[in-house]
Image 1 (cartoon, helix red, strand yellow):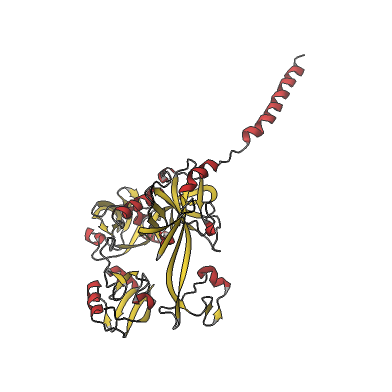
Image 2: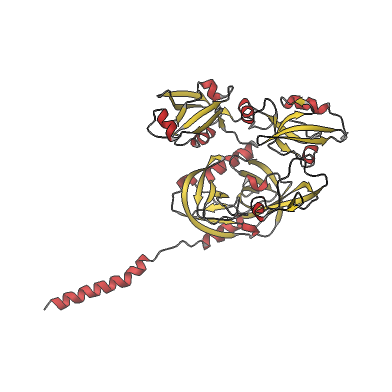
Length: 470
């Protein structure tokens, strides 16, 4: 008698679950409309221009031949030319497009250093279509962060979050100007944190699958609360476009750099004076280590903090103030975050024994203002001395590194670039900035002078001619 009633009850329950389950299981995707409405007014488009000299031959030709498309993938229409270029030269304006955001209502804007590098003019286009000329407050290439200033008040700003609170898998969104299209919005999730990229060891990048393309650089990365948690900086690509991996600078790192740029004009970071390499499996076995980790010291600057503190080539640094050095790329970040003059306790493996060595961290050489020198009137460059480790790495005995080139000066006309090492001027070796000043003061006007440069380990000769500036 009761079975039909029980069956009816069970059937009703099953039907109820069948109806309810799809509604309960329906995925709830985030809605970014409110975030975009609130944040978009403080996101800006950045364009830059600079005058460069080029050969009058078409930049798509090299040696009279059309540059194949495969090379334009890498170089665009700027096929590399040797220093000095060709005999027939002209001027042109090159423009780049990027993004940025206002973080102070008095007109301070954050972007990437590579967006505004070597720019003669920087224009910022606001959400209300106003275009304002911007001043470069400062840029730090090691973290790829730059701060700009426009003359305007009561500008809309973005709320800053904490990148230390981020977790893998959470939703994030980007607003920027890919390919010059203003205020384009893309979204995705964080796929990794504390990611180290080659040549960018000072930034623990946020890795996302947010679609980032040329023009997005410098734009903000948001969490679902509309707070900026990162600055979109790089993509991993084989085609020049987005392929699923994007990298952002954590906002905590960016703001620390921005505050130093605003207050001091440069970024001060710790320095040990060591050349390091990863510990491979074979090296770990040879050192008696159970696991391949740490940073192996391959070379020391004889006058650097590490050498003075008693570190030796062959030491493996395992910890810095109790923080593990899981990989060699972790060490520069930990040391760089230490204020110059502070002491750090290093846990070191030496000859199979673990030791603790205390070292007073120095300041990264040539970090501060006033350490670049030269004669900008006569030659149009600013230079810095080379330390002994840099000389050994380049295989030279003397020289000075060129850190700035006046685009209207004699050096720029000769094809000299920032980053070049000036080894010889005329037939004399260049030992340092002060000596270079004296050499330039004694050079005759209107006479071609040969200069030996070292560019990325390769030797180049160029010639420049000083005009009569007096």
